[in-house]
Length: 262
Picture (tube, rainbow, N blue to C red):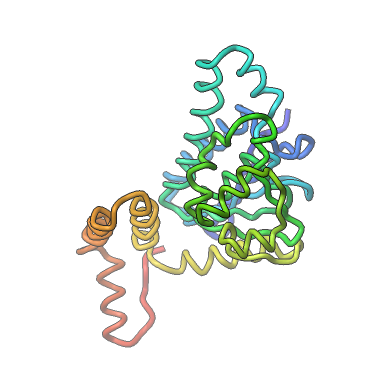
């Protein structure tokens, strides 16, 4: 059996690939668990500064949850469905959202259901011009369960989000860009190079500053402005006295490029 997640590391960037192309990279429980384990490994690897997440094959980033497996959990009752499906999926998207190293989705095809929710949760996203998105859970008689009812309206606005959630209609990469779901749309064969270039533009900066921006932004979005400002202050304070901030300020004053830790 093929590994559900592939991991390749080069130039301080980890490429994670959802690897069920024969099932359009559907998110079964084994794949979600393997993704979480890969994130645990990446988190403690000091040689990795950024993550790109994509799907195997040319057809799909991820077509969403594995409906056959999910249906069996539903048949076993509410407690099983909540434990095995909902909590597992929500833990995955929460982990992606709060990860201290930048995660960039390289959306190479269909991003439906849970695949769209992954795109919503990660920090940045680049889409192939071939990519398409949808929130089709309502066609199954349910709302999204991996955070889509919460993250999508926050990203694109309440009315746009509700339109997508209530109709289940697919929409192209260009609309995903227009509404703020992805950061860029590029030709299909330029997708991974574009994602890598974006990652390199981020990791040229200090690791602590990058992590601080991610944490302050992610946590602050769900807080009142005063609480968010406190988080921002805490992230800054954690860097005072550290090498990167000291060097960055010295370089600025001396009008030279900073020599940041790598």
